[in-house]
Image 1 (cartoon, one colour):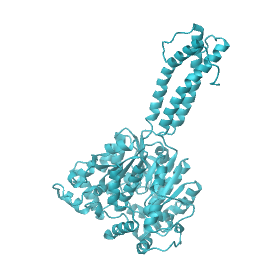
Image 2: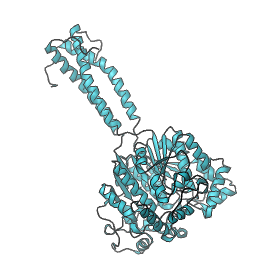
Image 3: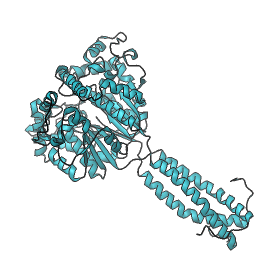
Image 4: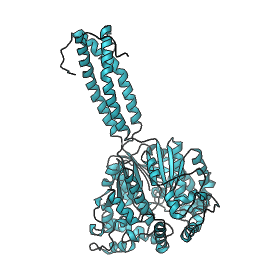
Length: 199
Length: 199
Length: 199
């Protein structure tokens, strides 16, 4: 339509302008309501990685992906649960008193990220030694370097409190600056994430 | 523009209002079309978990996550495939006649959720016994309690028909109230999910 | 308001048309800006599968899911990393010179998709033989058939260059028509995907 159409008398112009604005206001409110409903169905630039495994190769993959996600601009969180909790253990920390079952679990699970084994070809630790040596030879970041990088990139690390409880692991045994939470904490991050992985 | 501008004669007001509305109709249709296109790119409040593993610890994690998702208000479905199918086996059910291969598989895979082993430290079943005992001591829900909870929370459990066919497992051997389907059934749920996990 | 209301006089028609168009221009720009912001928070019809495992059963699951996603109309990519890289090895290819560590890894990892073992019940390869035989008896597609199908369905297969570097695997040892990239390449696909899985 031609915007240079012949002009109507001034009083009509005013009435038209006011009516258009009035109807647009209602329409705007309606559209913004509809837009808000669609927006609720969208996601944030976020990624959420569950680290269930305590295998060195899998934990490494978790941190490679988490730092990669954070480097790509995603708000990234990692949820360490079950065997994955071992990756968050502070080296040499003793923790509180444990019952028999808890002591058995403590003996049978890795004491820190430095003693994780691999998921394949572990051969009493040989797999982990080889993997670490090959990565060093190739100047690929170690797990501990990746963990430091993740911290620098503000990756949120959540220790699963249910797993801590089940295995008798206390906060004193775990790294500093962790977030603590259960599946509800994980889910709150996951529902608004573009990438959700279980490792 | 001032919406309190002097009012034009009533008949002009009506004509203007009608004409504005008429012209806005095309615009509304255009905006709603664009909004619909964006909406197609969004997701439902849904979560979809593939349970590929038949390890007790992993199946447990699957049900903890599924019930957590359902409790968070997500429409949740679990797709049990490959070894994960064992978690759906009815205790003591015999099923139909099997060929030699199928009998070998039946002997080598767990006969129900109560005989699943753990992915780590299984030591001929010791790991599963310990894990179950520790969870009981800590009053954490057992797998069977979590499965009942999942049912109460309307978690949809899909038995993978391709895996049933490959392993010679019949519906009679599986729990009641399951949904049956293949990868297309899974994918239909997954594409509209906020959380997609492979366990 | 009744859109079939009597038509306004021509001068009002013209004035309304011009005023609607004038006010709509600003409004349209504003709404399209808001719509674009919401659109940025949406996803494409895409799926992204990380194949970390080199176990036959898990690689099979990866290809069943990838071809299922592609058949459902999703743009699908698979990222082969760590042990998963073995699934992309060309049968009988020798590759370049390797150092001692690389030779040890080459000996200890499968030489092509045809020599992958299973994650459970492998019994020195028996599990893989049984799984392959049962799938053949049931006329379920073999891994190699699924890989050919994935190629036909334009599934993008990405070989992880960091894993190739770490394990001393050269392009000559891998299948033709692969895409090469690292975690950033994966992440670019994953952030716009409806389905993200780690296998």
